[in-house]
Amino acid sequence: MGALDGKVAVITGAATGIGRASALLFAQAGARLVLTDVRDDALAPTVEAVRAAKGEVTSVIADLARAEQCPMVVDQALATWGRLDVLFNNAGVGTMVVGGTVESIDLEHWDLAQDVNVRAMYLVSRAAVPAMRAAGGGSIVNTSSVSAFRGSVGRPSHAYAASKGAVLALTHAMAASYGRDRIRVNAICPGTIRTRLTADFIARAEREAAEGRGIPLGRVGEPEDIARCALFLASDDASWISGTEIVVDGGAPSCHAEAARVGVMREIVFALEFRGVGVPVPGAEGKRRARSTATSQTLSTVLGADGIRGRVDATSGETAVLEASVQRFGDGTFVETGTIAYGGAGTIDFETIGRGWVAPAPGPGTMAGGVLWKIIRGAGGFAGAQGLITSNFTVSAAGEVVDDQFARIYLP
Ligand SMILES: NC(=O)c1ccc[n+]([C@@H]2O[C@H](COP(=O)([O-])OP(=O)(O)OC[C@H]3O[C@@H](n4cnc5c(N)ncnc54)[C@H](O)[C@@H]3O)[C@@H](O)[C@H]2O)c1
Image (cartoon, rainbow, N blue to C red; front, top):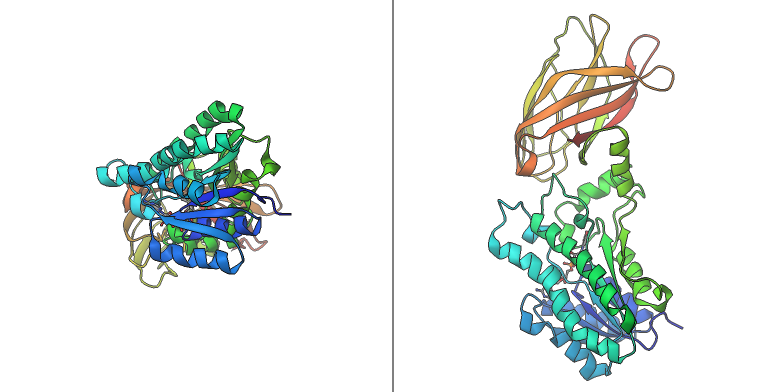
């Protein structure tokens, strides 16, 4: 017996990504489906795939940015299946379309974010609630995002974040009102999921996750990870859960806890590879040429003992890698120096602020180091940002720095 046997479910934004994965899973769980999307050509293959898997499905093309089209999806459910039990409000426009800060996003795109990501939930739900009440209850699942909880320095998306925060508030408020009708209302907050919406940075996120940075569970999310959560919330397995949200992000908030523990900073912006190399430098001057693994970057940097200035010209969108060294100076002190590279498009000028520092860290022969950076000019929201790179490194009996290390930049 399937978890949604006998139930009728509407899924918005069903053409691709999370909506498509949910359509296949809900059908497998026994639901009769109404799939809807604005993209006719992309929705048709999903409908076909559900049919091929012996799912019962009908579809309707609707632009949920247009208020008058929103009730159509509920009308279709009632006309075809005669009832409605589950509404998965999942359609959304992402940061590639509605990204930017309050200064950079234009009003039209701000409105688009709100209209598709949250106003459509209001309008489709307004049509759905009476039908669910008539059916004796139901489940509404709203797709929010981890963007509702935290901003991003690297990929600012103020309109998107505002819309996803509003989704949570709407979820809580609706749950309070409709519990007496046995209508449950919950939200899902996906982290980084491999869909069209994340095509511009998924490769970098995947690489960082595999290297143990950013996502503790070591991989980016797949649409099916969210679909399984949606199925749970839609089904009677969640019959006493309402007015809450489930974060499905591979444990990413634990990384923020780590940042808080070291007493710094609000958000991890870059996760950079750090290589500790023993470079005894007489006096306090050293010059090194930096290396970047990003093929289309030009990067030239002169390293000094007390400050580094450099420029990164990134045009490919590939992730760049930091090459840094821990230098031992004539007076026996160690100083971290290095270069910083950026994986986005555009140019960043940066300099270090003062000398790096080192301090003993737990463990034999192990030391901790750090250096403060300031980005003088940069793409996106980076200008003026300051960062701290920290690392642990080991000093051999011969006094050389050994071990490859990892470091992160934290922004205040
Ligand atoms: N991918 C992620 O990392 C991620 C993270 C957090 C939240 N989300 C949310 O998940 C939901 C699904 O996105 P996805 O990642 O599967 O990407 P997706 O682009 O594959 O799915 C979104 C769907 O919404 C549809 N849509 C967009 N505008 C519409 C409109 N005006 N009317 C009707 N349909 C419209 C699109 O055509 C698309 O099929 C979105 O709400 C998104 O904000 C995604």
